[in-house]
Image 1 (cartoon, rainbow, N blue to C red):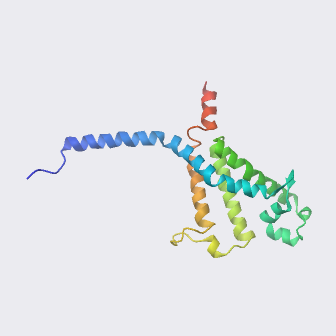
Image 2: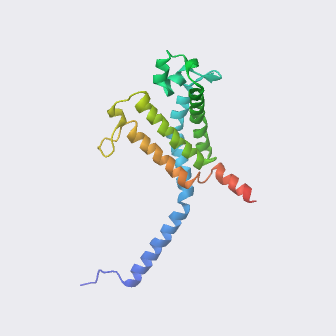
Image 3: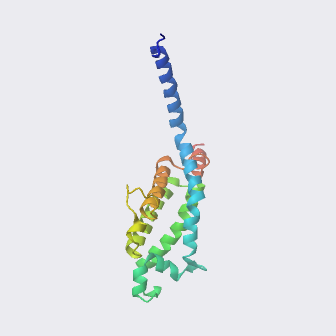
Length: 188
């Protein structure tokens, strides 16, 4: 009968190889995750935000739709006359529309990636709260965690979007980003 137990030397050698592989993966993780996160964002979410922004722009100004999307109840209360809204509402609508255009662009370029991803997390929170409280979406659209139904547009989808943004907050823009290029240029 042969002894199937590994020898101490082969176990030590295997553990050393695994340790080297783990260090190599850990070393390249931020570059790979940052770049991959930006590509995934560009392929899946950038168009969503840009399309949304375009519905808020009318020529060189903000459309009535912009105000109705962001402040639906307030717009209804003033008979859809945006001039009746205060300065705060105008600033929020302008900032929200600008965020939907600029933040995706920053992420795709990998420029100020961490800051852009934090801004996107804030935008996701505002959009989600507007959908829930402003538009009054129902519980099915909101969803619930751990309910075995992964398709609710608010909680399930936006939680995944937020996770993608957190990856970019913690890893940065990764390889092939303007952040990396600028960092190298500033060192020289």
